[in-house]
Image (tube, rainbow, N blue to C red; front, side, top):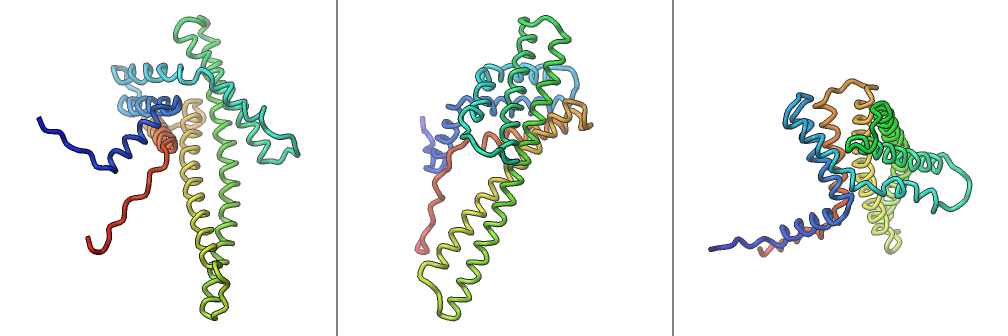
Length: 252
């Protein structure tokens, strides 16, 4: 019996996947991806796929048992100070996530029979969705503020790099000036890419919440598509950074 040896790069991807699955959030997001995939395939039609979507949704609940407490921890650990708009948005986001997870637990309790009143479960479901939507909008506001700051930092780094090149042409360049500007530009670009990915995920979450609340009309398949985008991005963000690809020498 022959075995196929995995490449070092493949082993790195496997280790990264194991690191994600070792985290509760990683398992939750993986199941969420399967849930939205089933929702997309079902397209709202009754049958095995829709039942699978509901079962996967309920399977995520144990991973979120302590999420209300986790969501409120930033409020308890935040240093005292002036309440800026960004700080206020972060506090509202924490409360909104706590509302989402707490009332989602009530919905699960109704699904398993602990809560028997259907009206209570339906009100809890809508309250949970509103918490999700508000938390997503707060996250979006904070991310857009960060993007504005990062863009200003990038412009400053680009100006510094241009000045360093002009100084180099005029032979008045200070030692390390150009290198520092290039590094600052790279850091700003990396941070901006990360923030834009966050925005894509947050907008997708807001779209799902708004659709489930019937505030916008998307339909089951489009709602599932946004859920898939959000879940895949969240899973990717939980992965540890991979080492850079080895570069081949010219001799090779």
